[in-house]
Every structure is written in structure tokens, then in C-alpha cells.
Length: 318
Image 1 (cartoon, rainbow, N blue to C red):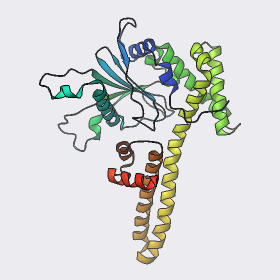
Image 2 (image 1 turned 45 degrees about the vertical axis):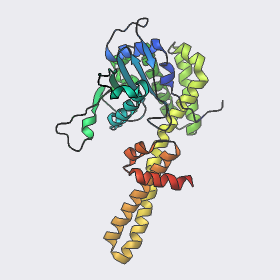
Image 3 (image 1 turned 90 degrees about the vertical axis):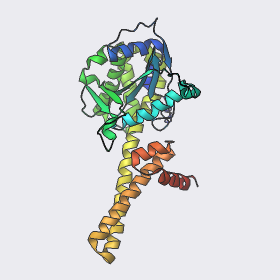
Image 4 (image 1 turned 180 degrees about the vertical axis):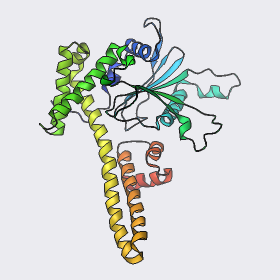
């Protein structure tokens, strides 16, 4: 089978893209008892907003609440509250008539909730909270707060939240199986072949155990494409950071040596290393530009100014 490495959807979104599954998922996470038949659900996910054109988030309204839910793969990003703030502003712009905000009558808006479902490989608590206020230079008398609930859905953690939803529990087990097979066969074949093989093995075992059976029978090849892309994107992000840092650091050492001969080793090394670090950061920014990330998020991830990013974008487009 040919793998489509540019697949933009995710297994998680595919599983929870209908009203019934969303209601059950929300009930499991929040401990509520919404009835599927009587609950109004509207999926209002925005595409290409949070990372690299991947639609791996789920945003929906449930009655009077607006829920932004992220299924996060590898590690917890402490900037999630800030990213959610930027996201929710766009959602409100989308669902509201902007003319109404200039009227004197109070405009009612859905109450937002922010949730991250963590299934990375690093150890993490069963539940945690991330606060926007932690990002402020001055944390005294903060007037703007945003709280993100983080829930660890890894199968090995035995989180009671996961066990309340058969679909979420099945998804958690499926990802666990892929990783288990990856570890078991990691020395037997090349990485690309290994990943595809392990995904197919996990699909086969889940079907045999009646876990997500109907979903996997109907969407098996699509699931292979989606999960292959998800796993490899996480590897790619780590490689970009590592390679950019290493390249920049090595170039910095060389320049530092050259400057050190003329101006003194210590001063030259310091300057060269700083230049190398800057070059490494710029290489990360160029990778993010290539993958379609917006300037404000590139600035958030790299610390570069918007003017610097625009300059890099202009150079890169030539």
C-alpha cells in the first residue's frame, strides 16, 4: 500500500467527528450526563490554525458552551494557553456578527472550555492545569486568565476518564499497541517500514479483540495514512530542532575560532556561539515557514520578531 505522507486529518478527529461520539467524550471528560438526542452539537473546528496545517484539533459548541479540544501527541507545550487564546478569538469572530459588539446591548457568547488530551510517551500526571497567567512578565493583578485542563489518556496510566468512554479507551489502547510493536520490532526493519507494519499489526489485533472494530474495518487504510503522518510529524519536529541547533552551533564554533585568533579566544567563541544559535533559530523558522505556519506562531515558537520572520519569508520565497 502507498502511504500518503501529507495526510492532514487525524485518527482522533475521525473517531470523534459525529454528534454521538462528541457527547459521550464530553460526558466522560467533564462527568456530565448530556443526552445524545436532546443535546445540540455544532462542530466549528477551524483548519490550519494551530500547527503546520494539521487539523488535529476539535472545536464544538455543546448547548451554551464552546469547547476547544486538542489531541496532543508528543509533549505538553506550556504555551497552549496562549495558543488557545489566539484560537478562541478567531472562533468568536467566526460565530458572531462583529457589528453587534458595537451595540450597547450586551452580547451573549458561549462559555469557553479548553482541554488537552495528552498521549505522549513522557511521564505526565493523570490530570494537570496550564495557566495563561504564567506567561505574563508581571503576574500581579492579572486581569486576563485562561485555564487549560490537561488529561493524560495513555492506556498504561489507567485514567478513569478514559475508561468512561469506550471509543476513547479503544483509541488509547490502539496507540499503545502501535508503540508496543514499535519497541518490539525496532531492530528488525527500517523506520518507515516498521511504522507501517506496526500500525497494521495494531489494527489487526484491535479488530480481533473487538476494539474499534467497525471503525477500523471501514477506515483501515485511511487510519494507516493518518497515524503514519502523525507519528512522523512528531519525529520531524524533533529532528528540525536538533539539526538546526547542531548546525548553528558548529558554524558558531568555527566563526568563534576565527574571531578568537584575531580578537581573543574567549570573546570570539562567545560571539560565534551566539551567531550559531541565531542561525539555528532561523533554520527552525524557515522549516516552519515551509510548512505553512503563520508569522505570529513562528514568533511564539522561536522568539524572533515579526519583522525578522517577514524578512526570512521574503528571502525564502525568492
